[in-house]
Image 1 (cartoon, rainbow, N blue to C red):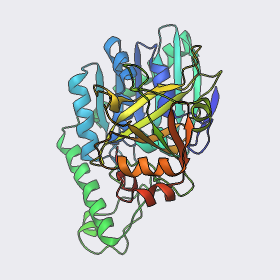
Image 2: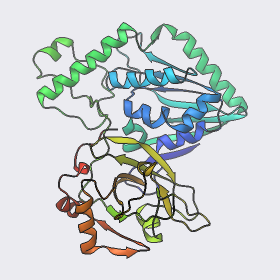
Image 3: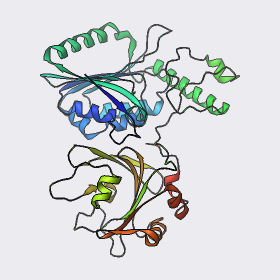
Length: 384
C-alpha cells in the first residue's frame, strides 16, 4: 500500500483523478462510493476518454450521497453520462438511520488477475479530484484479495438495496431542493464556505430555519460550483507567440527552459500536464491532458485543443497566454491576431520579451498581465 498526498502547490504532486484513471485503464470492472458529487467531478473523471474506454469494455457501479454538496447540476451530469454509457450503474445512497450520512470515498478496479483499491479523503468533485489538499492510499490486490473485495462489495449492495435510489426518485429530488434552499439561505446571510469543512456535521438544519431566521444556521460547505483556483499574485503567466511549425501548428513548440521550467515536464518520468482552454466569453473547455515528458526527437511541445481546425493566420502570430494555477495545471487563452487581447499581449511582449527559438515569449506576473489587459477573462471566477 502506498500513501499519496494531493497538493496542487507541490510540483511533484499526484492528483487523485490521475490515479483513478490509471487504475481503470486496464480494468474490466469497477465500483466506487463517494459522499459528494459535482458536475465538475463528473467531467474530470466520468467524461474522460480513458474512463469512457473502460466503460466500453467493462462495468462500473457508483454510489453517491446527496446529504450536502451534491446539487441538481451534478445529478443531471451523472444522468447524461448514464444515458451515453449503459455500462455505468449509478444510484443515490440514502441511509436508513436518520442520524447517519453517507460518507465514503473509495473506488476499486478489477483487471482480472487482481486490481487496485483507492481509499482516501477526496470526493467525486473537482476539488476532491484536483484542487484540494487530499490524502489517499493505493493498494494493489492479487486475484484472491480482489475476489474477496468484490464479494464484500456485492454483499453490502444486496443488504442496503432499499437505501439505493434512482437519481430521479422523488426523495432524491427533495434532498437536492433542500441543498439548494440551504445555499440560497447562506448566500442571503452572507455566509460562504470555500472548503468541504462541513462534511462531518450530521445535524441538518430544519427547513423552517432555512426559510426564516438564519441566526443558528450551521456553516456547511454548500458551494454549488466547481471553480478553478484563482490566479494569485505570486502565480506565473507565460505569454508566448506560437510559431507556425509546419501544418500542425496546434502542437505548440517551446524552448527547453520553458518546457521543463514553466510547464514542469520531465526528462525521465512519465508526467502529465493539464490545460483548460479559456474562451473569450469566459467559459472553459474540457480538461486537456497532455504528456509532459521529453521525446527523443527533442521537440518540446504541447497540443492545444483550441487550435484544432484553425488555419494559421496569414498576418501575425497567434499568442498563447498560460496561467499556472496548480502543479502542471494551466488555464490558457489562444489569441488570434483579430481577437480581443491580442494587441495588448503583443505590445507587452514587444516591450520586454526575449526571443525563444523563433518566437517571443516571457513569463510575467499577474500584475503585469492585468495592467496590460485589465478586461481579460482570466480575472473572472472560472467554473468547470
